[in-house]
Length: 438
Image (cartoon, rainbow, N blue to C red; front, side, top):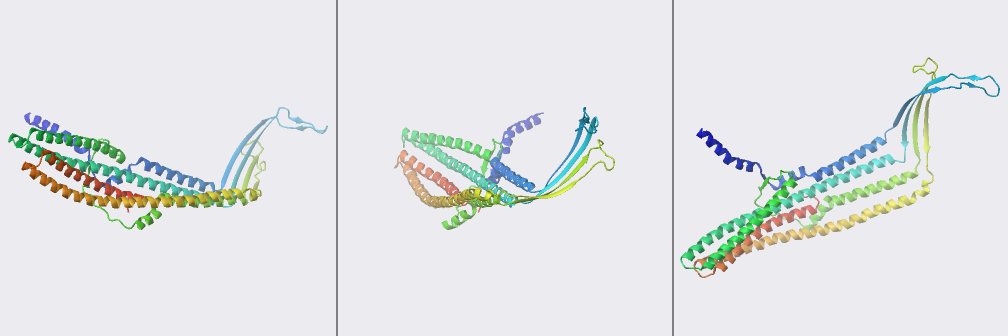
C-alpha cells in the first residue's frame, strides 16, 4: 500500500514536467521556415488562385471544342373545328386530334475565328504564370516573417542569458558588500546601492521575459503550432556571411524578383491582347451538320415510310467589315497600355536597385558594428576587472563598481543584439534579390 502511494506521489510530481516537455519544441531556423511555409494560410490562398487560373484555362480549352446539341419534341393537338372550306371547293376534313414527334441533332465547329481561341489560351496561360509568381512572392514574404520573428526571439533569449549572468554577478557583489559592511569597510549606503542595482536588473529580466512570451506566442501562430508551445532555438551561434559585390545582388534581383517577372508576363499578356483585338477585323468560318427527325404519324415508333430524316451540312462565313475602321483606336489604346507596363518595369527596376543598395550597406554597417562592440567588450571587461580590484581594496566607490559592471553587461547585450541584427540584415539583403535561400 505504501509502495503504491509512493508511486502515485512520484507520478504526480513528474506529470507537470512531462506536460511541459510535451509543449516544448526545439527548432532550427530552417525548420521554422519550412514549418511556416507548410502551415501558412496566405500561401494556401495563393495556391487557390493558381488552381482558379488553371481551371479558367481548362474552360478556355473547352470553348474551342465542337458544340453539339440534341432535342426531341412531342406535340399533341386538339382540333375542335376540323372542317376547312376555301373558295366554295371541296371541304378539307382534318382529324379531331393529331400527334407528332420531332427530333433534331446539330454539330457546329468553328474552323477559323481569327485565332481568338488560341490567343485566349495563351493569355490565360500567362496569367496562370503570374498567379504562380504571386505564390512565390508570398512564400518569400512568409519565410522572411518567420526569420524576423525567429531572430526577435533569439535576441530576447540572448538578453535573458546575459541578464542572468549579471544577476548572478550582482548577487556575489551584494554578499561581498554586506561582508565589507559587517567589517566596517563600507557604509550601509554601498549595500543599498547593490540592492538597488539588483532590483533594477530583476525588473529588466521581467520585461525581457514578458517580451519573450509575446514573441513566442506570435511565432507559434506564424508556424501553425499550438499556442502554448514553448519554442527553444537550436541555433545559438550566428555565423556571419561574406557578401559578394553589389552588382552580383543586382543581377540576381533582376532575374529573380517576382514583381519584375510579373511585369514581363503582363507585357506579354498585353501583346496577346493587341493580337486579339486585331483579330476582330478578320472573318470567321464555321461548319455544321444538322439531323432532323419528323414523325407525324402519332406513334412513337412509326410505320414504314411515315416519317422523314433529312440531314443538312453547311458552312458559314461572317465578317464584320465595319471593324476595319472601328477597331483602330482599340488597338492604339492597347498599345499604350503595353507601353505603360514597360515604364512601370523601368521604375520598379530603379526602386529595386535603390532597395538593394540600402540593404547591402546596412549589412556591411551591421558587421562593422560587431567589430566595434567586440572591442568595447574587451575594454569594458578590463575596466570592470580594475574597478573590482579597486573596490576590494577600498579605493573605488560602490557607484564606480556598479557603473563598470553595468557597462560590461550592457556591452555584452549590445553585441548579441548586433549579431542577430547583422544576420537579419543579411536575410533582408537576400529578400531584396527575390530569393531568400540562395
